[in-house]
Amino acid sequence: MKLSMAIIRNSFPAALTGAALIVTGCADTGSRDAVSDAREEVREEQQELAETRADARDDIAEARQEVREHTVSKPVVDDDTVEAQQDLAEARQDAAEDIAEQKEEVAAAAAELNTEEQRLAATQARDAYVKDVETHLAAMEKDIEQLKTQADQANDADQAALNLRIDALEGQHDRGEEALESLKSADLATWQNHKDHVRTALQNTTSPVR
Image 1: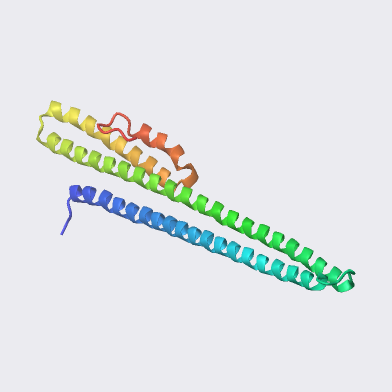
Image 2: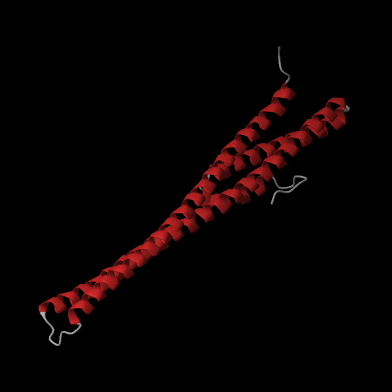
């Protein structure tokens, strides 16, 4: 059984749109998962910082107690007392270094979370724009089909004018589709730079794209 060209023309863009939605949907899901993972990493690093601080307090308290035990009722500072005081100083130094290092881990995790949140926002903005343009292109396809129907029923003079309009719209549609494909294949950080190409390709259509 042969399919009419009209059915093929109508079905093929719909299939492309469905595939595009699947791809962008996967990208959105991946970005959401990355944000979720980054938030969990921040939570874990913050918990690790709290534990590091608690361990530091315990180590310093233990070292301080050792100093007390060697200084109470001892008018003369002996070697054990000096060693205990050195241990206390080292405990404080180690605690400061461990806490500072863990704070850096928290800051790095927070920075990664911020990056992933920005990436998610950019992905959602791009996908929303792509959907708008695809809807606009689908509307153009319907307009073209309606014009073709009118042309089939028109007299020679009107048919010539309608065919010119059809050719113009089809060219505009193809340029818009090409510009959109270029936008979708662009890096996430630079996709906005391609919006002007899409606008230019679709200018003077009945429903301007943002």
